[in-house]
Length: 387
Image (tube, rainbow, N blue to C red; front, side):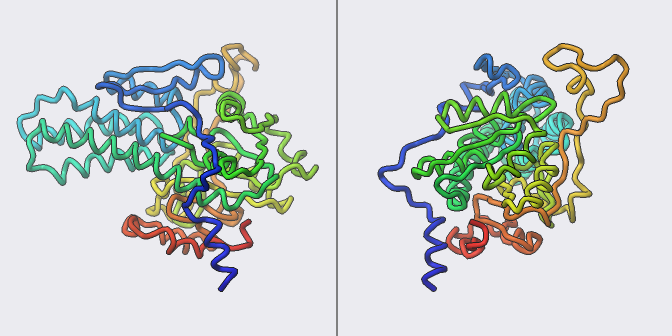
């Protein structure tokens, strides 16, 4: 009994007075006086540049070209894109307004196919409109704006709650390997995987990070190192193919990544290269953790085999920073994501608790109808074996 209580205390949401904020001092995406303000992540790390979108085409382009990226941030961008897309609607009745809303939603949905948060947010906006069909069109516009802002605020809170749960899995002196960017640049606040590291740092734990460069677009090199250095987190950049070496050398205690879509059985789609890391972690007996909000769960899918995988432009491989690095006409295969089987995942950390194997069973606790479940009811999912 005392042991169970000890485990629960490790994941409580209280914050000691001596703890210091480690959260990055920037906002990735926000609503700014009728505009969507977002960091242009294609300009990092050389320049911190903001894009101000006043129409839905700008939001679509920002999503497609990765100016904004990261599953939670894409959900927020999609919701705010809906607001911009219907702001000039002249519809006289709900059915006409709904038709325009669906057209805008379909347009945004065509930008990128894998991150389920985008589709979750678009569906929520459409469902909100339908639930308020008796309202006037001007009222509906205001309601949808508030819903989009709610999605943003909910993500901010989810980041903090997820970080609190996950920080209990990190020990003082740990070195964590991460892939791509699952930090503040991918969300409205702390981040998912990196948020856990920020929270551990606030608790006074000395946590080091090894960041994969993450080919071909180098999100680890350009984005993860940029934000970790701003937050004064000890970070070392490595080439993707160095991961096995540092694991063999005993330099890595845990692997911690984000996710773009998680099937009901726990299979997880994330930036390509994540599956390879999971195999390496298993071979070296290193815990492999996934951090994602419940909006990333796609419980309609039986397994990762059903997750649509985006393929990117071949130039992302053949032209590094605008310079041709492969012979013209070279055939290229460029999936943006891969799927890590649930059997390779030690645990999935969400804002509602930590899901342990068998993931297909434990993830059911995070279905929408359990949205209001109290966190303390979920803490028994955390065991000593995951520390």
